[in-house]
Length: 157
Image: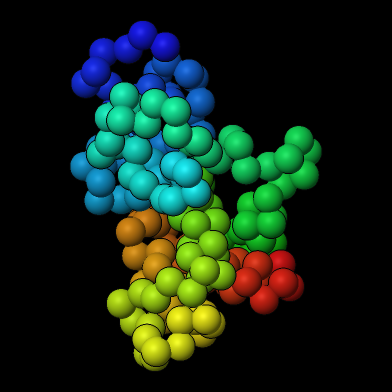
C-alpha cells in the first residue's frame, strides 16, 4: 500500500483496510481497545506507525477465528460472559491470546512470585489481572474476562 508515513497502524486497519474490529478508544495507548498482535506480541495499534510494520504479521480480532470456528479465547469470552457492551472486547481478546502465549513461554509478570522457576508460571487470578491491566473495560466485565482466560489456560473453556 502507498500510505502517508504518519498513519498509525490503527487508522490503516480501520480506515484503509476496513477492518473495524479493532477499536479506537482513547487514541493515547491508555485503554487497550486497539490491541492487536504483531508477530505474536500484543501492541497498542494507536501508538505505532503502520510503516514500522512493513513485512510483519499483524493479527486482528478478525484473524483469530478459523472460518466459522471461533478461537478458544473468543469462545471462552462468550461462555463466561467476558463482555457487556463489547467495545473493548476485540482488544481484550487479542491481549488474552498473547497473555496465554507469554505464560506458556514462562514469561514472568510484575506479580510473579517465584522468578527462579520460569518453566511454569502459576496463572493465578492476580497474574491474569496484572497481565490484562493494559485493557480497560468500562462496563466492568472483569470477572468474566478472568474466568475466560483461566478456562482456556486450564483447557476447560
